Length: 424
Image (cartoon, rainbow, N blue to C red; front, side, top):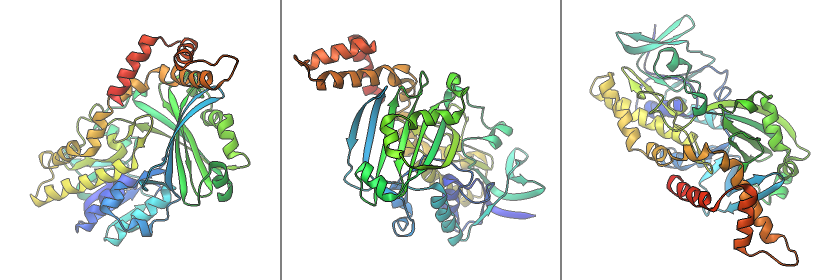
């Protein structure tokens, strides 16, 4: 019978982060990853915010081979073949693009450097509960025991739902992300986007390219690849009846995007569901007798419409889980009361402050006007200002014409501006 101090189920960012911080403190920890390699079963857009790594594992800057540092942030409103774009050039390197297997392979190596074990190709079928306490896991015919079990299985939540530890999220609470990776040479990417070799773009799109469905799109530059994709609500069943590949293709064939990826080869196609906006309305609590829930499994992701937070929250939640387990171990307990420290740490952390801060953004991002009428309004306004005819339009005239064309009244515009100000 194998026994460890801590069993971590899942070798994604949150699971490996938890294992790293625990192993560093002398715990005997094992990570059980169902994929043949770490990262083979994990999907993400391509961008990582650097602050948790700078804070906890600063040596990553010399050890980890990133693809590109984000030097430009873009947000575009798309209406038909028209597009209005805002660009910001940050003064410091605060995020980077990377292929997730590269990040996770490096992080798994850090776990092993500290004496932890990362076992791949191991599917955990269930959690072992004895007298209401998690005491281990069942993987095939093997029983593996531990003082603490950390569930880091990602957004699918199979184990949690199997044991009744969380309810199944409703379709309107889930998003579907569909991603393609297009191979191009580095020089072509640099020339088309005006980048240096290490410079990258993170680009978000809101508009009508998904028809009547609620969703947006993203584009990230790698060294010699472009990652692009769409994210939409699972409740948009009218679009989901189509082949999901057609959704991202519809975006890729927009003239503004087609020019960027022309001549490239699609080398990867990925899709995943994501639970957003925290654990509090899906999980009763992210802990229990003998177990903790971290990262995406706890719903610790946020989509504000112009930024998407996931990997950074995963790493941070792993650190907080390790802190909670260390505390519980120090008082010789693995019960729910001792592990409730994890929820306290989460609630005091920037993770839950961010989730709460943008909680109202869900209602805003669920409004069809955000994807249909407001991009039409923005494009109509700029069209009115920059279309030169015999008598040019004043700003107020262009705005009135665009509002009339997009079907947005002045009162509605003012009310939505107030809502946006409050929630974003």
